[in-house]
Length: 109
Image (cartoon, rainbow, N blue to C red; front, side, top):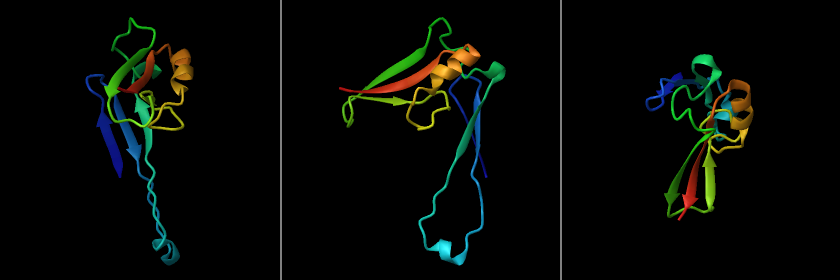
């Protein structure tokens, strides 16, 4: 099964695949987990081809009243090892591709 979604007005799409396999009778009683592999597609290796290119790094903040932490960074480069949370992978991506993508920060009010 393929999953395809597009971002808002960026011209990028994300395609992922759910791995399928047969389960043995013993495995059927265990908790089943699904994994989605997501890959970013875009021209020139960059994630952000046109949005706010005059900024060194695009980072947006949203203030939320009900959060457990003061700041929670969410990944927008699709390269984080802790996706959907940001782990800073965008820094390496930005240097390698000349991109300027950064995290979405949710801030506690």
